[in-house]
Length: 341
Image 1 (spheres, one colour):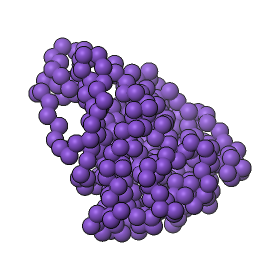
Image 2 (cartoon, rainbow, N blue to C red):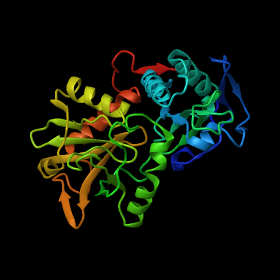
Image 3 (cartoon, rainbow, N blue to C red):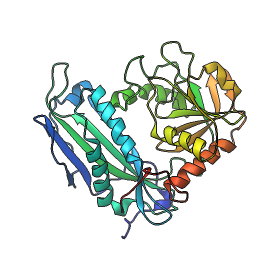
Image 4 (cartoon, rainbow, N blue to C red):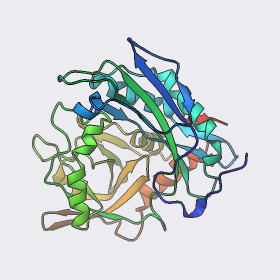
C-alpha cells in the first residue's frame, strides 16, 4: 500500500486529519452497528450532556508498522475493558468490548496509508471517545450517546532522543478519595490543566501528585503512572484506588518479571522513600517511559543516581524490551499484538 505523502521523519506530536473515523450512536437503549465516515464534524445540541456536565470518557492507543511489515495494535482489548469501566462509573452505557476492538480494526485498516513506516519513530495514534449527546438540563445522565474513534499520525513524543525530565511536587490534588481518578474521564484532565500550565511556566515538565487524603504517598502525574527502580534492581509502582490503571505500566511490569527476571512490587509508595530509589520514570502510551532525573519539592531537590543525561540502565532495558515487542523485534506474549493488516 502506498503511504500518505508525509515527512514521517520530522512528524510532530499533534493532530493531522485522516480520511476515516468510526461513529456509533446509542438511542432507545441500544447501540447501533456503527459506521465509518469521512465527516470529521460532530453536531450536537447546545444542551448536550457532555457540554453541561462533562459526561465523557476516552482512551488512547497506537497502531505500528512492525519490522515484518505488519500493521498492528498493542493490547486494544485492555483499552476496551478500561473504557467499559470508565463508562459505567459515569453512568454511561458501555460500548461492547468486542465491538470496540473491531471498530479499532476498521478505522486503522481504513487509514492504513497513514500508519507510519517502520523505523520512522512515528506511529498512528488512535483516540476512542464517547459522550452524552442529547439535551440534559437537570443534573442527570444523558439518554443518548455517541462513540467515536479518530486517528492521527504522530511523531515520537521526544524529538532528538529521550532525555531525563525535571518535575515538581504539585500543591494541587489530581483526584479525590473515592472519586474518578481510576477512570479515564475527561473531567480529570480538565482539572489538571491549571496545574500543568503552572508547572510549565515554572520550568518543569510535569507534576507529581500526592495522595489527596494524607499527601504522604506518591500517586501519578497528570497523564502517566510512576515507575521506580530500587538500588537492588526491583521495579516498584505506586498502588492507589485513585490512580488510573495504565496499560503501559501493566505491560512493563510483566516484561520486567517475565522477560528480564526482575522482582516487581505494586504497593503504596511513601514520598519519604523517593530519596532511596535509583531510577524513576513516567509510563504511558505517548512516550512508553519518560525518565525523571530530578524532583523539585518546594525549594528542595530529590536527584536520582541515574542522572540527567540519559535513561537509567534498568529503565532503558524495560523501554527497549517493550518497544521491541511492539515493533515485532521481540516475540510478544500471547494476545498482546492485534494484527490489523
